[in-house]
Image (tube, rainbow over all chains, first blue to last red; front, side, top):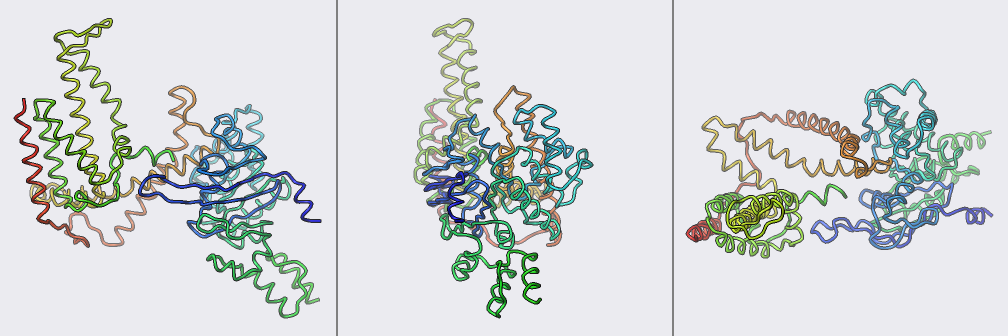
Amino acid sequence: MEIRRIQERNIAIEIKDLKYTYSKGLPYEKEALLSVDLLIYEGEAVGILGHTGSGKSTLIQHLNGILFPEQGEVKIFGEKITNDKKFLKNLRRIVGIVFQFPEDELFAETVYEDISFGPKNLGLTKEEIDERVLTSLIEVGLNENYLNRSPFSLSGGEKRRVAIACILSMRPKILVLDEPTSGLDPLGREEILKLIKKLKNDKKVTIVLVSHSMEDVLSLVDRVYILNNGKVVLQGDTVSIFKDKESIEKFDLSIPEIFLLGEELKKEGFIIKEPFRDIEIAKNEIIRNLK
Amino acid sequence: MIGKDSLVIGQYFPGNGLLYSLDPRTKILSFLFLMIIIFLYKSVLSFIPIFIIILFFIIISKIPFKYVLKGLKPILILLIITIFFHFFFTPGETIFKIFFLKLTYEGLNKGIFIGSRLIILIMISSLLTFTTSPLELTKGLEFLTLPLEKLKFPSTEIIMMITIALRFIPVLVEEADRIIVAQVSRGASFDEGNLIKRAKSLIPILVPLFISSFRRAEELAIAMEVRCFQPGKKRTYMKRLNWKKIDTIFIIFIIIFGSIFLFIR
């Protein structure tokens, strides 16, 4: 039943046999992607995992036409990505990418100016821009008092949220996040995770989460692709992937402790109905068992 | 994507061969000699043997020609303007005339002469930087400018500054690349509108780039201070320069080779 429902959904991202080499033909030539196949449905939250150098960042740069496939193809909502200027402009509206440390790309004097950069580039009217800036700012959990502040005066977590608002103001249908919680303190991390969950559940935005934080992946995404040396080596729904301890560790990844706790408790005779994806679930399950 | 491909001038091209095995001092001195001597040449014919030997060096170092041509690209406009002015604005015997432009024999001669000199200059300097890593290059320069310390010239400090600058060029290029990619994803475009609009479109790249450079500079300063770096103090090196017989032979060969063609008129 579950599987059939998924199949009826639109395909958001379809990648077939994608290959990409950096500095092709030079001595520094580096094959980043060998052959990647990937399928993501509309409204899904999918994680792309892999340790450093596995090709994650190269892969996501193909999603909005920053890099073009050397071989194979990338389709967004059924349309093949081409080098056409108009197409790319539209594509970058549909696919929003929040790169690693996005706060490094803030440049304007005020938060308003920075967030309005994207909508301005889309050629919207002043009213539409104002409206979008404010709603995106509220979406990321900040308020209008921030509009006239300098982005450089904010805290790390706030900066990150403003940077995400910069992308949200383009109203993307697909949101790609590259290590959205890295370098943040625990509180900042918690806020970002909450924000992504909200986007997924309320706005039905398709989420692609690139991360090597297994905790983030476990608590956020439905399905996982694991990349290793430019190839997809493992894929499946998040819970069953994490159950396969041997394979996970083979690719230098680890299983979150909270998940392991659930598995251990099951062995001890606890009746676990829902796998431990975050603290909240774990708490409820343990309390229910102890009653 | 944008920066990496365009920054060829002064880029090291890893490989091996005669030029790679020479001491950086040898390469600096002999190429410097060649660059000076071609200014003394009187005839375009003298450039031919120099050009041939440069091609020979490029071939034995296995540097692709595409790469060499890319290095020439930045001076293309300068080259065209120079040649154009010499062609049409040198007084002399007219070959033909379009409006006020007169192509003269003397101009043709001079244009070709100066144009090829410019090309050879760039090729020699690229040959040096293609086959010598920036670190080797600065080490060689440091050694060569050391005698100037006696004249109160802050050689080691300046070389340290150059080393740091060179070290951070690829870092900055990568950083710029990263920022460009991110801003393009936010809908920025750099090739639309008039000149002012284009210049303005660079702000979203330059501001973050400056901020990160300042941050890097500060971090580096702290790291150096923590390691007790003091300007002007004598330091030791892990890798020492080492002058071999082949270096002496090479330098003598280049001096003789370059001087012979001085006498062609």
